[in-house]
Length: 445
Image (cartoon, rainbow, N blue to C red; front, top):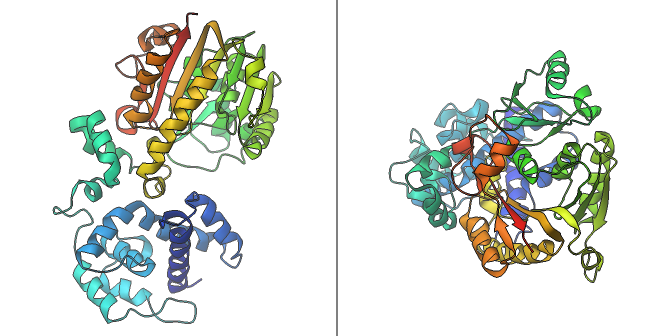
């Protein structure tokens, strides 16, 4: 593809993302799924071209809040064309980020390229040329690249550290792997990966983790194909660690999804005992089956939660550990999923808090006396985390907090405590992981 044809394809992709992800009436599908469908129906776009088109479009997605502010200041509508033009001028995006002349030339009206800029678009280009992406006149939302509705909650949590956390949410995340103890140990995995050109270092907090400094293709490696490693952020690994699932226990992963934490707990159980991966999605559980097989897990079963299902009632009070990895806003993963800050809305938070409340009530009934309920999210928002725990403990006096300091000293002696407070609370700026929350409660009666 010519450079201008790539620009045209990126504009088309941005239009599709707006229609399916970001517009008020959109289905709000994850952007990577929309992009995958986009390229699947355009097989004429080869691998190298696809990479450039994706980089152009994702540059806009990452900076859309700021780009819209700049365009709004000029009274210009944030069309896909103008957003990409603004990114090329302000963000110095890709090969075309060489100033106004190069940016305007990319809109060359060629057969496969985008139409030439009209007079209004050229005026926008003239106004943006040479300006900084982050303007001193910006209000907090675009300046920090955060939607306005999350600012009060994040300000309450991070205070003066909010700017640091916001900046960390813009940095490319490392790629963390979890070593599957059913297949080998961390040293053996590191050696095997090094032999395939992937230099890894141990994660500082998780005893199972290996880290690559940036995203690399690992699914084709022997270590991955043989089930020795799985892709899993260190913070997510720590949630499985704090569950402290031991050999011989009965464990329920109540919101298992594709079973990432099920896999980790099964390994810590040494394939002894029984773990049940539950979810409301048959498709997610089907994906979990493939991962369980590759990992060599044979002490796990899957259960589809459905309306009218009596499975939970029949198993009330019978589990040693119940993990609730609750559906949430995913604000802690925005550095990996920049479209999340555009797709997620305040009404989503209000709905999810109610869902989390209901799930906690149902899942807590499964815990036996002396057993533990583990509540986790990948959210940075107190409403989904500390406040959710306060509400649950107020209505469930039979559950008592297990302090993080006590748990950590038992599970990771000699390793510094990740954070202060009774609960595990992680963030990109604080611990270098995705944002996670985890609370462990013990049932006394």
